[in-house]
Length: 278
Image (cartoon, one colour):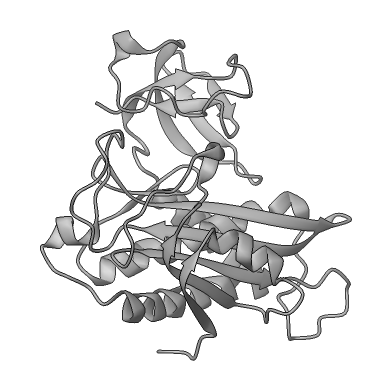
C-alpha cells in the first residue's frame, strides 16, 4: 500500500545527512531530505559518496524516538542505545525489498552496503544521537545507484539498477516506493515479535553468509586508515592477515559473527574485518 511521505527535494546540497541534522528540530518523524546533486556526500568510513547528478538517489530519512516511558504515538517507541543496529537492519531490508520488486536479487554486505552479486549498488551512513541510554534521533543516509552506467575508475566494484536490468527508472517514483517499504519495516520496532523477525530476515540476506570465503583481519590497523583497504584485491596483495571463514550471523548489538576454519567463533566490529573480493 502506498503511503503519503514528506519528501523534501533539493536541486543541490552539500550532504543530505548534514541538511537533515541542520533541520532536526523542525523535521517531522520520517521526513526525507533528497538531493538531485550532492557536492559533499558522505559515506561510511569517512569516505565520500560519489554520484552523478540527476541519475541516482541520494537521500536521508529523519527518525525521532521517544526517550521516556510515555509513548506519545507521534514518535517511535523507546529504543535502547545498545539496540541501535536495528535501524541499519530496517533500512537495508527495505532496500532489498525495493530491488526485489524490480527483479534485482540483492544481498546485505555487513554492516549496511547492498550488493548485487559481487558489486555494490548502494551504501548507507547512519548517524544517531542518544539521550542517556536511549536512542533519540537517527538520520539514515542512503545512496542508491539507479540510472548511472559509467563510474569513476577508482571505484572497485560499482553497479546500478540500470546496469542490472537495462531499464531506466523514475527516481522520484522510486523514492516514494522505497519509503513505502521502509515505513512497513520501521513499524516492526513497535512490536517485540517484529523486532525478532527483523534480525532473522537481516541475517538471511547477508552477503556470503554460510559460505567459506576469504577475509582480512583489520583489528590491528591504525584507526585513522580507511576501513576496507583490501576489498577488490587478491589474497597476496593484502597488507593485513588473510583468513578463511564463514559468516554465521550478527550479535544483538550488530557485531559480525564469523566461524574460523579451526571452528572458533569470532566477533568483528566495524572497521575490524574486510572482504577479499576479486
